[in-house]
Length: 254
Image (cartoon, rainbow, N blue to C red; front, side, top):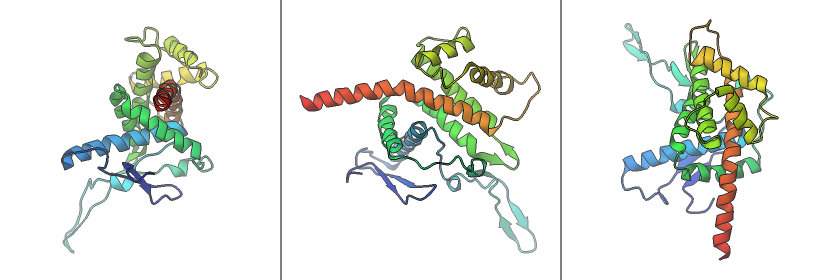
């Protein structure tokens, strides 16, 4: 990090780090502007980190806990605030699949952050993506939000397929058009037809409609569509990144 870097990464530990935003390069005039600016920057960075690593990074759940209920003790005349709506780490579900992030993935994170920050049409995509990240960790008693997370990631995936890859106003034959888009970006060997149809069936029967028998969406179902989305975003934004680097080097050499 340079001295004037707007991002300061510190307190790096095994499963967490502290990300601080400074006002050195943003030129915000008031606190409200700076808070809004910082929110966009951090969200974009988290999104870039997820895409570059094909992994799962989110905010510390302590920062999102909300005091949903009060428990009152009439004898002691005291209140207890259970934090029932909260963010939870999902490490317990992925024992053995957690890997150390590589230097190359961190470098790619910075590169994709630059692309995402400058892309004019990314705001809708970023909003759905971040909603998916938050829903993936959110719990309320015994209720999870996997179905909502799947919905967010699928909407983001469908938007990229339609507007970025195929560049059409809408998908006429959704499954075939999705397969066409996946083949176009060269991901046909990773995303098989069986997977596409499986995710599409979940989307049709469990997420967008509730006419058929409803079943629980698993964490694996959500991660399948998220991995598909991350790989698609990686493929879509890599040419944009490479062109930006060529233009930069050309200007630097003139």
